[in-house]
Amino acid sequence: MAAWRAHLQLGPRAPAPRVAKALGRPLAPAAFRVPRRSSTLVFPGHSPQIFVHEGVRQALERRLMAAFPGPVLLSVTDNRHSMISHSEERGVLHVRVHHMFLDAPPDVLDMLVQYLTRDDRVASARLGRYIEDAGNRIVRHAARSSLQTKGKIHDLLALFDDVNAEYFGGSVHALITWGKRGRRHERPRSTIKLGSYSSAERLIRVHPVLDRPWVPRYFVAYIVYHEMLHHVVPARGGIERRVLHPPAFLERERSFHHFERAIAWEKRHLGRLLRS
Image 1 (cartoon, rainbow, N blue to C red):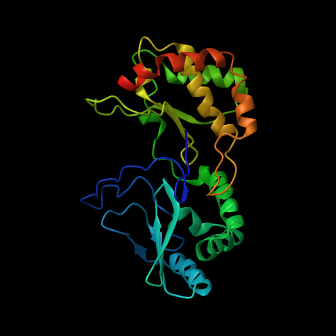
Image 2 (image 1 turned 45 degrees about the vertical axis):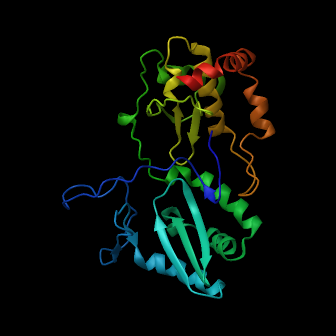
């Protein structure tokens, strides 16, 4: 399930794209729009991922400098894992923000400045809600054509459609895919995340360990239902106390027809899942 860790975070970290060797090839899977042709383009770091409007970046940096007693260094990223991060070193404030904030409304920028310069908790909670609401504006790196929904045993898209129709009236507009298969380790896992939901991508990922003949369809459907609930019932709270499963979430989760059966199956087969 999705988690907020040290800073404002959202979804899993995307693998860095390889740098194109020629301008005729795409530099990255996403680009921030540039209002004027004469604008300066800055490619941050050694592996560019976005086109950054330098004037807008400098304007935000100046806002931070006006509220902070020392120098400010602002970097703009396309990191979908950590949307905002900052640290202070030798009186210099180092800030990294997702490019979604470059065209954010003035009141959101005010909250951003308050959080980064004063660690304002009210501002952090409001920023969390803004990030959740703005998820549909973040470029989705996983196009439908690249999603893997057909497994050897279970068809995730068919499961998604059935669950969507039965429990949500077909109102959930999200994507779903099997996760990537990792290496087999000599020692069994100690933990396993069977499903996750990224609101930035509106994407549900299901662990491929569930694509086994001995894993019942109703259990995979329960995992899909659980992650769809994350799309419908957002988390509550700010950075320090992020509640991923608020009471409304837990109440709706129990409405799944095979809820008790699925929980019991998971307890009985957790060891086998960890070894798979």
